[in-house]
Image 1 (tube, one colour):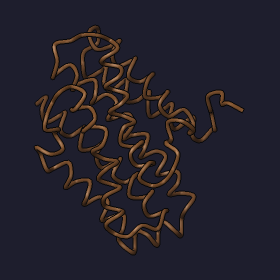
Image 2 (cartoon, helix red, strand yellow):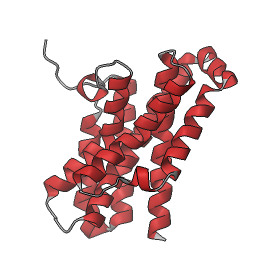
Image 3 (cartoon, one colour):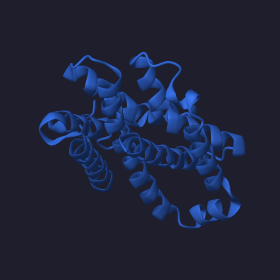
Length: 209
């Protein structure tokens, strides 16, 4: 049951980040291969970095093709002409969808990173849990932005990495007293809530002038 729960959650995050990457590629006018590669990179990048940090090789994305298949299929659907026409016709609405979908992916992979750290290592340092959770959450988005020729969102966008850090902290704090499911749900919900509120209300950290 635990494995099914973890797989379902990770596939949700994979699909969410694949949409985010594919929509970014469509906005950049990439061809079908570019859309699929950017969707795949965004969806699996954070998990690959996580597994390498934990010494879990080869990473899960290469051992189980279901993650790549879901990412590629999702990206291909985004590329379909009727879908792209709908995106162009309703650009403001799709930008809002992209924000929410990306927030879901960020939240899912943040808590999945913490869960993986608990499962794969006997080390119980809070810093390790926090680092792996955040790098799993933001890693795919950083690779997406680099591949798309953009400055990574975590450095400039409305409360992005900060949302992941705070959600990861809540998940870590609740893990023992509340149990893994409540901890992961609370961390995920906080990441999504903070990210969406920050995006729509344009909350930012102080910037260098």
